[in-house]
Structure formats: structure tokens, C-alpha cells
Length: 386
Image (cartoon, rainbow, N blue to C red):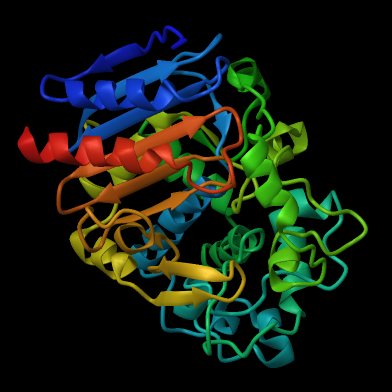
């Protein structure tokens, strides 16, 4: 028996097919499914939909690595300001980073996941993992897990701290979270938080654990355990206090500190609006990034076999190269980032689309939820036809 689904929210004329696509996706979901879908096209919001118990468009979810998009935006602003140079060595700004053979690593290589500092032996402790500056201090003296520049691998839980320390040094002592708040979130009214105020806690809905079906559970159980693999090290599973990724955003310490790798809290509206603000501009002003900056950050820098994820990946300067990594119907130069729980967000400069999706229950098997392909395609097709 097909359950009745009531999707709330609005779509602009010409985007009715996006609501239909969302309805078809939800037909296969569990009764307690909750999620949000939002999109802008050339700076105008055209999709604002949500569904689920006690859910509305203002509900906030943990968005895991979709947070990294905010971190890269701050780095791009400092490059645009002339405060950071992509081709200078990281150690120019952060001398301690030169230890253990890392002196030649450039900012560009670091952002493109080529530095090899994905974690530390024995892992990070539970307090360290929520503190970007503490993570950075450990990583400065860490030997890379591969020769920097020779290959690439996803810096899952360390990239935000690495970018954050660069920002801190290059900006004269301002944290990445402070700059994001002052230059991006507040002036553009974005519901994306790298450090959720206590007053906003009632809007946050905790992440629900993955609920795999029997076939999916069998697949998960068949995966080999490798506690000292690069994948385990990168996700802090190699120590006495392994990080439980699924429940990570449910910690108030995580939400309060907003670690820039995976600690952000957002709505789909917020994610889509952030990517619209950086790429096309919104009603509050011109684009945050010039065409030159966006073009430079959208160039592919690392593509092929990711030695951490052990699969095909594609990274631009920090951002995932969304058209190569996820959705080939998007234009070249598309930038974005997905999150482990299922969230997805990106900007496609060629079509003017900015997209955001969140869901409450952690999606199988982790990473951008499969429904994003259908939903993003529906938005893209509608934008081209509008």
C-alpha cells in the first residue's frame, strides 16, 4: 500500500516537475522520512519544499561535509582579497606546517586533497575532534601518509582544520568561523551555521541512524574491517576514541564549535542560498566571488582514484567538481560538496542553478543520498526550460 505523502512549500511556475520528482522519491522512503529541497536559478529562489514530521523550511540538520563548501568559500574570499596565494607554500603562512617534509606543499595542493595529512597515529581525542585549532596543531608536525602532490585522498575530518589554520594565519588571527559569520552568513541571511547559537537549538533536529534493508545490511556487514587503513585514519576510526560519524552532529559541542570539516548545521534553503550568493548573487547583492575566482576554484585539480575513499573522485580547488564527481548533466566548473548523511549542495555557473538538499535520517551507504541525482536533474531540466 502506497502511503500518502504531503509535501509542503512552493515551486515557481515552470518548476512543478521538481515537486513531482520529490514526490516520486518519497514514495520509496520510510514513513518517518524528513527532508528539504531548495533551489535558486540566477539568484531567484524557485524551489522551497519540505516534508516530514515536525519539519518545515526553517528546520536545521547536521550537514556533515557539506560544511566544507562554506570553508572553501572563505578561503576563496581571502584569495580574492589577495590575503592568500594558491601557489605559495602553506608554510609561508603557517611555518610549523613545514615539519616532516611538508615544506613544499602549496595552498593549492592542500586544498586539492594532495597533502597527505588525513589524520594522526592513534587518532584524535573526543575533545580535539571538535576543535579545529587543536586538530591543526597536531597535523602541523605530522608526517604525510603519501608524498605530497604524488596522488590525492579525501581529507575527511582534517580539511576544515587545515583550511581554518591557513585562514587564521593569513587573516591576522580571525577564525574561519568568524569570517564566515561576518562576511557570508549574517549579511546574506543564510541558514548555514558554523557554530550554532544556543538560541537556535530548538530548530535543530537530531540525525537519525541509517536504517538499511536486509540486502543493504548484508552489504555493509561484508565490508572488511581495516582499523589502520587510510580510510579509517581519515575518519578517525584508528584510535582509542573512534568517531561515530552518524551521531557526530547530535553533540552540542559539535554544533557549538562548528568544526569546518563536518560540523555545520543548515537547512536546504541555507545551502542553496549560499551557493547562489557565491555564484550568481542574490537580492542582497552581487556574487561573493568574481567570475575569475569562481573559475579558478572550479578547475579540476585531482581526478581519478582517491587513495582514501578507494574509489573514483574529482576535486577542484577544495570543492568537489560536481559535474565530474556526481552529476554529468551539470556544466563544467560546477562546484559543491556533499555530506555523509545524504545532504548535497552545489552551484552550476553555466545554468545559474544553486541547489540544496538535506535529510534527517542518515542515508545508505553514506555520502550524497541517491535521490539527489533525480532531484538535481529535475531542477536542472526545469531551469533550462524556464
